[in-house]
Image (tube, rainbow, N blue to C red):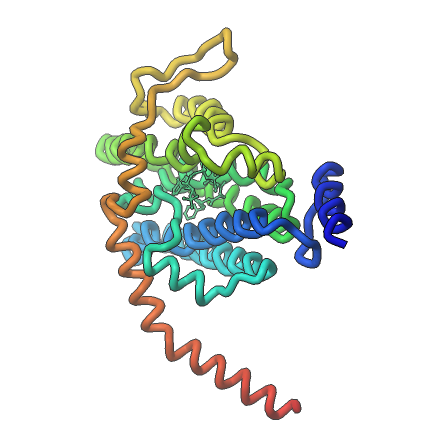
Length: 310
Ligand code: FAQ
């Protein structure tokens, strides 16, 4: 029996088909998928904060409506991904508690502050751009519920990326002060965006196994390079400079060369010591505690309905 289910798992991967919740999976596969989906869900939920910070201060009704829609989409992505983790037996309440107790990670990028409205544009352009670059290949990830979630999420991320780029285009056509604001935001967000792809391949403990299980389809460095190649021409069109003196086209490689990411900073941020880690987690904790009465009311309502049906 065990040999048969193991064979089914291996065959499914070999044929590049999807693993579904009903299928047997090795314990390591289940744990890896839950970790990755939970971290992704947490990132979407925590990721609402840096931009959400600007909803009340958006410069026009149009920008406010767009930003509100984007942040709502992020909440939707988070909930969708928590549901995907539940198909593998995880419990959403438990995952939320692990997040606010600092036991589970979320993307390092959301621990940086949003100082001006240009940051909203740069998050759309660079952060959503990096997210798309990382997540489009995950639409072919071996775990069915995650791969399917990625299809919808990527479509929405793509709208997010365009709204950011359009916002920046508008600011770049404005005053010198607006152009300076955009450049300043690019200077602050460029390197943290490159960190979103994770540690270098030589220092990435999970990549080899996740590639073998076809959970990940490319390594961290491959995707980081793809992002740089995609973004440099966009920066030229926008008229901003990317803050890397080593950035140049390498005709031999057919890619842009770029400087070394500050991995010491990355490690600091991932281990909880970034500029906004404490604030982000504390905000999430408060929202969770303030929402307790809603969860209780929903549970009471569900119990009552079930009673009346029975
Ligand atoms: N930040 O061995 P690896 C978004 C952790 S969504 C924090 O290379 P792996 C949308 C890693 O988890 C952004 N931790 O790990 C949006 C592992 O942890 P462990 C989130 C990081 O899994 C836009 C350890 O380091 N996207 O932006 C980071 O093979 C705008 C060792 O690393 C996803 O989650 C990091 N940057 O590769 C929302 C996509 N990098 O084992 C709002 C799915 C690594 O200690 C506004 N995830 N770590 O628990 C992935 O593709 C992968 O999990 C990677 C990491 C590539 C992130």
